[in-house]
Amino acid sequence: MTAPAIELKGISKAFGPVQANKDISISVQPGTIHGIIGENGAGKSTLMSILYGFYKADAGEIFIKGKKTLIPDSQAAIAAGIGMVFQHFKLVENFTVLENIILGAEDGAMLSTSLSNARRELKHLAEEYGLNVDPDAVIENLSVGHQQRVEILKALYRKAEILILDEPTGVLTPAEADQLFRILDRLRAEGKTIILITHKLREIMEYTNTVSVMRRGQMTATVKTEETSPEHLAELMVGRKVLLRVDKAPAEPGATVLDIKGLRVVDDKGVERVKGIDLAVRAGEIVGIAGVAGNGQSELLEVLGGFAEGTGTILMNGSEIPLSGHGADGQTRRAVGISHVPEDRQREGLIMEFSAWENTVFGYHHAPEIQNGLLMDNKGIFAEAEAKMERFDVRPPDPKLAAKNFSGGNQQKIVLAREIERNPDLLLIGQPTRGVDIGAIEFIHQQIVNLRDQGKAILLVSVELDEIMSLSDRIVVMFDGHITGERDPGQTNEKELGLLMAGITDTSTVAGNGNTTPPEQEVHANG
Image 1 (cartoon, rainbow, N blue to C red):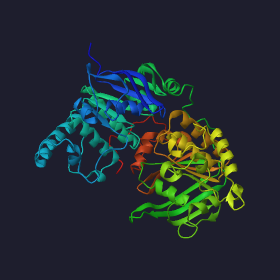
Image 2 (cartoon, rainbow, N blue to C red):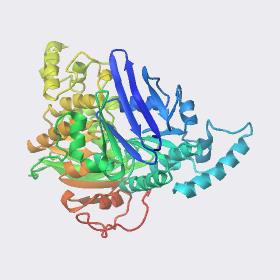
Image 3 (cartoon, rainbow, N blue to C red):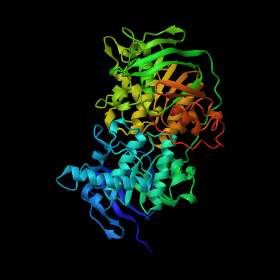
Image 4 (cartoon, rainbow, N blue to C red):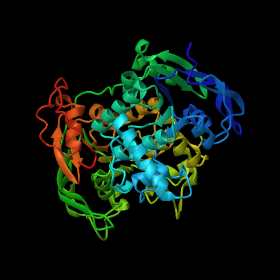
């Protein structure tokens, strides 16, 4: 029998009192795509970091192609034929593709020789695996899909036979994700072994041969993909049955809460990011904005939340709110009934060094109900923070714990608890489940739907099309600062939305319920 491409036996790793990995054994067959899934904190990243030499296991053994292998650092991993494509790319943005490929792997004192050799090898790899990319292009000018190809080429240039990908489709359009998996299929066909870490169960079911499930630092199951289901995998991950689809009744929209006319936003570099858009959101509905990151959605939320200035007209419950100068700030927005869950919870939603109870009132600390004379009512704030954390299932339920010590999903729950429980007329919410595990996703989605059912208006921005389609009552698509289309979630599909996200407005061949075939073309984030 052929030896496994990778075999881990009894791997354990602790960080102080926290047992990140506990006696994990896993076998990955050569020439397969092997999925690894689990909740936040399940130990997936730690395990892969041990395999790639970032951490040293406290106990256990690693076998590569049947041979026991010591991997003290990433150089040893590369020498053993292991490559890793991280969720956040490790590229030098002002270097060319070619320069990034050879960085750290130069084959002599003469850089020109290294570049010449790399150019030949790059051409060969591009032809063999369909990884076409201009070797002289500067990284910052490439779409995220092409940047990801560069990361894969880096690993293949270093002779990787085993490729680890961490959440590889998080920033890709549907078309780019399809192209990525075509490349991975070709790599698999050539005998390469792929380890795929993803929270997207649809990708696991569609593209992997085998899937391993981790929970609380342990391996709970390894199954053949064809013998399982998304519902079964979700239950293995969380330890209970999980509702994978958003359970909501049809919307009953009321009066217009937010009315945007001719909004334009120019960033601090003088680049126009939002280009004269019109948009309305009514009470009792969720309007989802789909689009690849960087096409104006973030700037739209920032202006509405008082983080940035713009021009045009915005009416909130029929009254105009300022877009620049005095009053164009978050405090004024909150005063007129706007709550904001920002896209980057760590930089804009929380003060990471401060405790959870302090974070539950940031932005609202001037509210009269939390004042006690000249000072804030800290005792009352603390008690309310305890109640919020219980209602929103924040773990651990410790108001004194610093925000930085909570997992990403629990940090998000703290922000949601603060903003939702202010009873806003309009909730702005950016990337509500970014980096959040499947159990917390179910909870967060239900809180958003509950707020809608109370008659509140919700404007949702997400790069996750599954999330947009399941949560939204109306879908608006943005590309290059413009709105390229509006769709009813029940009358569209991911192919059509993907084309709109790339600026292609003629979607007649893919509109409808998803049973038609899209035109043969490759769509990239830069259009």
